[in-house]
Length: 383
Image (tube, rainbow, N blue to C red):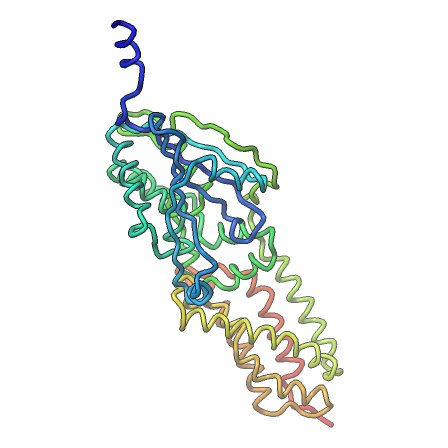
């Protein structure tokens, strides 16, 4: 009889509070893995293997996936799966994974586990994804905050390290030049407001850092322990580093001086400028499309449109005339000076005593280029 009682008391009750952890996956090499990832782990030993609640699932085979992606109306879903199954991919590709085990009250842990189970039901699992404000990491943050009755937001919303959406996006995308250039050119001024630590949590690694510093109402740390599940075998995430604008200015001035040196060989200069106007005009059209026809709201009101304008495409006809030894025409010259003036306006907006778009490096590079082209090609040709 005593042996039976001992077994009963030693076994965990079926409805005991689970152990809750936040798994953080380090960045990968595929473009959509550059920002890292995370999930909530619910460990109920009486029910078997821990479950990973992962908010990062999407289906590229959906018939409307591409059109939704372009419009900024993406659909992601929460998936609950065994932790070992979730870890299999990260082990295969060499991405490190660690788990921060949280010191939640039993009632908080049980409420969070139950809420995640409900959220993972097919009728509740799909949500509208936003890169910065509603992604796999902010969903983890919000679920934890609900379990803590808002304590997480209260501790993080009033603190800031000065990070911005642009800064973290460009930093984490930097191993892929096309990707960081796309973020840097395509984001508007909304991406440059300094974030609180609460908003920094759109990056899984930032959320993990914030959780490590949180203390609960009674003073105990929120994170009771951290466990490494998988070693990281890929290059580490790019470090934070300032990006000076002066090298860009030196590049822009060198290009402008070269243009002025070629002002007597306008055919050669116009031939080179055709590529710049074509690329700049196409990028401008993309920025206009993102602003006017999509829900990518962090791309709206992009001041880089003053530097890379769709009006550049209207210069192609006059440029070809100069390449063929003819005068570019009055409209061509007027457009050249219009684009140079727009670049000067971009500098003026950047210097205003309000929160500017952080595009000083692009202004430093492209303003001299526009002025150089205007001075070299913006005068009537004399035969």
